Image (cartoon, rainbow over the protein chains, first blue to last red):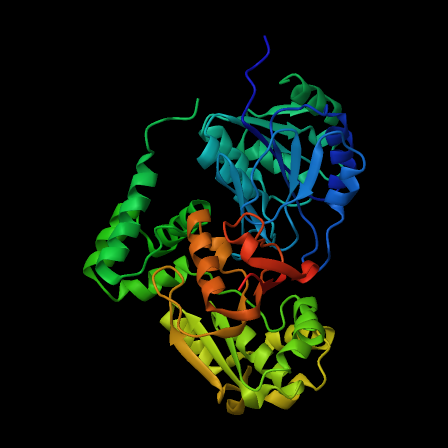
Length: 189
Length: 277
């Protein structure tokens, strides 16, 4: 049985993010319905090229978020460098310049926790490769709200610390390879 | 389905914000909820309250709690010449227009601890505009305003400030403007001779003068959409004909009901110009 489609997908990644997202995002069809909201740890002082890069490779729309960006289907939203990205309500994204969380701004925890608050059980959170523990608490918040939680198989991750921390906080998370995650998402449509 | 009943925490937040408004006239009721929620959770955790209701009881009965809570609710993070390219654009593209006026009013709205006030005062001095300018530096947080007026910053931040100033096209050395000692730097009092610091709320207060440049960066990101519209409307009504509005690097007037009152002047640095009057 295909599970019902969540209202939004949130993804967090750090070291190795580019390669991991390169497996997932380009695999999604142009009419993929849920918005995909992505936090990748990036240096604060540089212009991010992530959105540009994926725009050229994806069939869905790809944009770097500006404050109060409306959420649309079939679109991937990247956090800009040096701002936290939050889901403001079911239709809007917001940015803040609060203190870094676990040395990170944007922070995956901040995105995931806001998504848990706004969407409750109607969100899927995916924690990918990374070398620190950002995202683990957020993943637990999504699980607590009844949302779906997926962790990249640490064995297949470029950096295992982040998915391992995710599993520590969320032992019942689904563990999938990158291809498995792509397939999982495509099943929603 | 998303739950249709309101969560208890959401009710508590709404009531606390109402209490703050009725008791102290601080109006956070239209602040962006995601961020307010985070900071209230932080406040409860760090000040040892089990619930937001418990925090509300304390803040209603004990006014010494107010400044502490305001410290959580207003985000005071900035740096001098933050986003150097913004200041470079002001210098290279806005200043030539400002030079055609014999007197200038500049409004730094949400000035926090004053980093941007001193940045603009230095830029205007470097460009020979300081003597004809009055700067209005406003914020709702009294402690932040006092810090802004004092102009004292930790020494370990000065390397970043200096680097930013250089990248912004600074024509002097930042060290010309401060004295260092005891791990702190103190900015030259002459820089604030032409600055009026004052308590002003973008939520509840009105237009107070005709401005040539308004700089309000990373302030409106904490507002919800309707409140952003109010603030941008206030800026629109405050600007002289062809006056300038600078906002944060990741803010946009695209989503504002007043978008048609402005044109993009320097698109990549989020500097707009008032049109249509």
